[in-house]
Length: 640
View 1: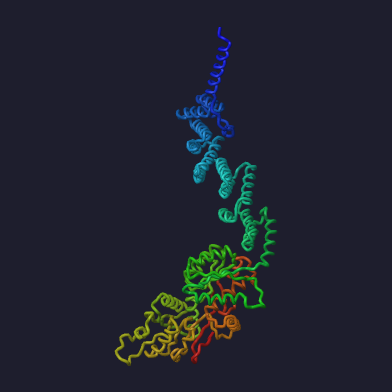
View 2 (view 1 turned 135 degrees about the vertical axis):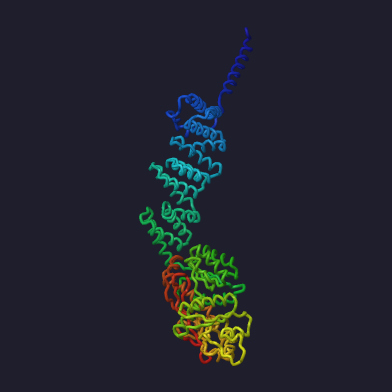
């Protein structure tokens, strides 16, 4: 007989042994994340009977929570290279188990196999969704689009793609990647899900994200993706709301006008009309800002400061009887293209300008105009630079161009003076060659001809050789040789000083009876210094003539002198008209947004200013009716 104490110890040890043995047989429990997907049934009707026992055993292990055993059993089935449906189901299940065991990188190839061998089974849709979730978890979301493209190329049923994009969108939402979530939900909707509840849910999620999760910058990035398709209307309306809240009423009105024009039947139309009315009231009383970008320091500072005086005068700050809703915001371009570009961004983003004016120098003008066009704000440049208006339809130029001068000069010479034969004596530099080409083309177009062309070095003062070549006296043997003057006018695209030097030399070589033609550079008092007989009858053009009897000019000169105590010149007159044109569009043209002003400028015809009639005939370049001037009796007078 075993003593009672020993019996108690024996029983206790036996219980411990049984408990240990029992614990050894218990599987390690993990969070059962298979509970959802495992509800998808095995396609039993498609499973060959020979594989059913092995698959049932694997499923029993999973039901008991022994995931490692279930994985081993499924891997054993796969090693036998079973039929396609068994192979796909086994890999689907193996992938799920690996996800449960927190081994996502090992799981991905199993789901990828299923995606590559889709036959249309329900579990295969879940495999695609699981693969998408894994790609997001492994931070390779770009593979989602690759997978979608591959499925489309194989004409996989749309239901699989719906599941793919829905899973990806939900993952993006969970990660708070709101823009990506919108894009993925829209991709899902484009696959036209058959489930109406799923469509409503997806649309509700898209619209909630747009309403509550995205800022203005994110909305602006999304908007171009959808054209006029869903959800562009919601994006545009929400963007208008955010801009309104920010106080950018002009941009908000631009958005809401576009919305109302493009989405007549939109569910938010009544809200849009209400917002539009509210914005119109605020904009009616709003002061609008014109940004000025000028070289106030640096190489061109003297020009920039003079032009700024004229712009300030045009704004009306010196006229107490004039009420204007326009203010100026001025930035110094410093004659630096990068600085000019930064100035555009500063004025658009910080000052909320309706338009920009300037710059002057060529490289800065190109940088500023390019940035302004991309920001959709009209800019009125003040530069001679060729091609600047070709940057886009928000770019305008109010300046006298080389082509404009030559065209006006040739038109007058041919149509009013009856001149058909021309010669060109020009400086051999970029400007001289450009003017020569413009003149040759304009003369040919008008029915005339350039009979002779001679370049000269820029620093020359003796032009005998060039003149003799023009009249075939280069090999002159006698002082009595007669020049062959086969032209009626000679064009000299150079300064007034050069004109004064060349004129008597033409006379010295007996080139008489020939009219001299020049550019706006001749319209200076220096032209008339010294002997003027040789220049009698010379014709040139300019955009401004201070001795004009036009009331616009005389009033401008009086106001300018009163404000600044000095006389105005042509470059200041151009700046004055440029500013006046912009202000006219804002105040009397009822342009409340940058787009309104752009459209108004594009339609402008025959604006009467101090630089004559100005129009913008479609290419952004000002077409001007230039003053035709001439030297008569030792004075510069206006012919037309």
